[in-house]
Image (cartoon, rainbow over all chains, first blue to last red):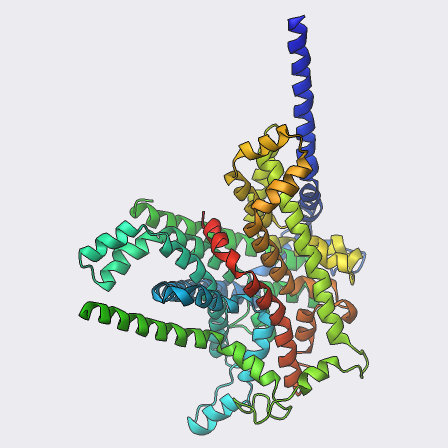
Length: 305
Length: 276
């Protein structure tokens, strides 16, 4: 009698467990469907497409094997994108971290009444579409804008902001850094606020100078956040697209992977080649991320994290 | 007394520096706004326009031309595309986060979490062309712009991490009281994740709103273009109509800024949480 009861209950819980599993899969079904149709399927397709010469429309596709990849290495646009990626990455990561930390340190010392609103206002550039900033920048730096006229007539400076590749590159870097710094400052500010009060107090009693405070206490204490932000900024710097596309249409000195891939695939209609390019891009991104990550981890270890 | 005065002075100096930096940071946006009210001949010719006018905005509302109201329609398109995307990613995040953390007997959850992690760090740009091939049938339609963005791996992760911090006892107690899973989600999970929900919705909404490449590829038809794309396709065409372009840019950034400013009180909690 009793044994039967236990068996019955067990069967009951088994059934309940099954039902819970079923419910779990049901709740995950939109994600699973998405993964299947818009991740796994395209992934297989991409590998296959990278070996093809195909213009997106016609019925005949030609198998070219690794031809697309060998062509890539003599492609000027791809080489520019590859090199520019490092330049963008370095400048954007360094400057957005420096400005982010500076803003956070400043806002941290501002009277608490206006602290919330200032930190939020610094974050507003992050919300603006790259299209809107590109409109402003494009015409602010246009040949006959009052700014350029002023430079020409008063300072005798004649700069073609978007025809001069170096100038255009820096304009784009500044736009991205401007956009990211306030956002990252929010992370740094939260992190600075989380430094235990005892630590700050002890440093103050020891009479630590402003600089010692920063380099010996604040920066080491927020190192995990620096790590997070560097990873975020790295990812973002690889995805630059809107600004070079709109401002220079991807000139050699400013072009990025995304601009080149878009250009090859959707204006030149070389879909196989474009996909091969994006595979190579993924490899660069993966390797650089790993490299930066291991470097940051070493630094973290040094400080005892 | 001297120490206190010095401290007060340093706070004043820091505040002044901060405000100057804030002004510099927001200057491009002030500039955009001022120029959008400048008369046509003065846009970008003077820092401060001699008079202010609404002509640039009126141009956007103008029903003349080959495609009347295209600017208004593009703004509507932006909303039509972004609101469902945001809602869907919240819904999927809430239900999936619940399933992955509170359904203790859910077999296969480890596999799903691993797949999430894998996708999160995967460079999805690789999939652009095949994705386009798959969704080409939805070209020039709203679903073509909504579907690929409505599952946000990041959003699912946020909810997954947040639900893990919620004590299981609350959900078990609700179960004892006879609440089903949907009721638990609606009555307990959703209200306790307010900050995460606000941040997830706004972030997905903003990213969708500012999306450019996919929309240009999937919706070449002007009737389905979002405001972001319409400005892009006109940036060179309207070289001599900079005023309306500035006005359109203001209209483009305003909804996002207002939304975020209204919800800024949730940020602190959200950022703190994202750092964990």
